[in-house]
Length: 409
Ligand SMILES: Nc1ncnc2c1ncn2[C@@H]1O[C@H](COP(=O)(O)OP(=O)(O)OP(=O)(O)O)[C@@H](O)[C@H]1O
Ligand SMILES: [Mg+2]
Image (cartoon, rainbow, N blue to C red; front, side, top):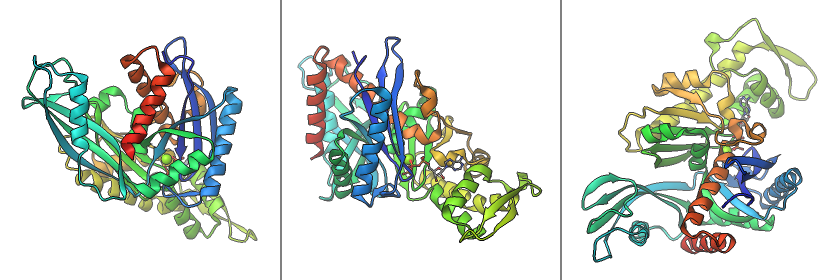
């Protein structure tokens, strides 16, 4: 059982580096037992630009989480994002091996292996091969073929790849901070785990995680990941627009955005004012909240239109009845869901991390969707591994992790 084992996530964000440690309690629910979050200065648009600062941030976040939990943290599940993440779809096909034609887990492993065989440039590595659906003798929409009878097993997969240097930098920073990356998971996938309800994933829904430097998009359908994309835009642009538009330092623009920002000037008062310190701090002047919203609105519209373009070009033709779930820190901007309904013409809500029982309040913000999602992913992975080979928890986990790394290189 996973109970008692510490499962840890590391979100290397452009705004903050966050560590969440959790365990499965006696009640079978996932409890957060440790949490650390420190501002991130070594990561821009999801890419590591300063190894030293990133290592220090990981160490500091880990230390906070260790102090809170009273447990030692050795490693965990690490999120990855940035422009150098990309995705494609591929199919694999094998003949069913057993003479009675009953499909086994080995057949499934072989067909997934066959789907991995793609011509990739030498500088790219595969981080996920996610089955969208299986086909048994041409019958489609099969989610778990094990135990079925057939002669030909096919799989359609969604494959996420990453630039090797980016991956190496993430692994290097983690290792130097004494944090062993157990698996690398694309951020959008993780955020979807935390904020989408199973019914939404089943029907077709998209999570849009708008952070500081990146926007991670993940489309789920029939319960699994169907499409992923990363855009190099996020809330940092809104902050710098406000700094330029209001002629105020970036740190002041950030405060004004969080405390007084809205996205819909027409619904914002022009008789409520905000004090804006000038650059150099010599004087303070006042602007109406309507003016603040009129600076924020076009940038949020731009980010959402880029999301729309990505979805339009994803090849997905379903109607997305589960709608769009906005998360990440920028989803806290007032009025963003209303603006997104107009632009995307789908049901939209703001997603907070779900699925955590104990101490859920410490991570109860869209900013921690990726971190909580990585934790949920980790719990699910470890439980799946244990179901396969119960009784050898530690040996099993480490041999699986070793296999994962071997697959990677
Ligand atoms: N109340 C708020 N209103 C508007 N924006 C907010 C609010 N709170 C946080 N933000 C913005 O959210 C962004 C940070 O979000 P988040 O923590 O999800 O980013 P990150 O994961 O560190 O970065 P990324 O995912 O882009 O690498 C910042 O731009 C911050 O200004
Ligand atoms: Mg993020």
